[in-house]
Length: 115
Image (cartoon, rainbow, N blue to C red; front, side, top):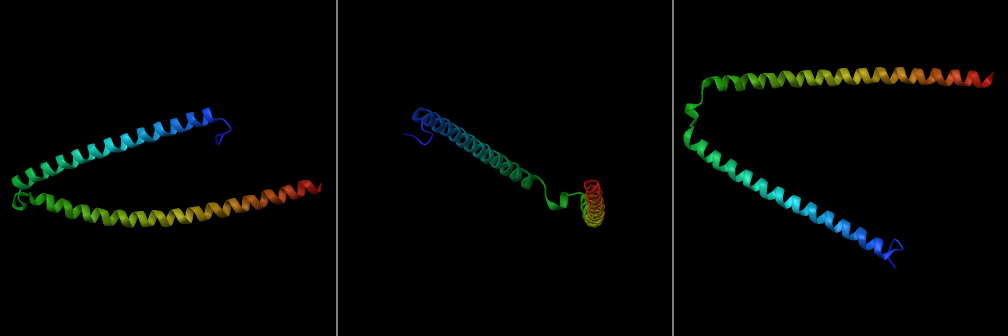
């Protein structure tokens, strides 16, 4: 007798699970093959770029943009930290407001039940 008390039902469930696992395995293997093909294509393109572009060919403007990007990232980090701090303050206020509301509701409920 099977786990479910019905051998036929158990066999059907096991077969369904096996089909599902096989399908997942095939999907993962296909994704791995596609990923490998993608990496090969990227490496081929990288080799072509390395042959055609030297560091002296890079426009100085790109270097300046990179510096500006670094400055923008620092500013973003500062803004993010400020937003996190503000969020924490806001959440603290909301938590206190809800605690006050909960306390008031409890008090009102106590008064109603006493009457």
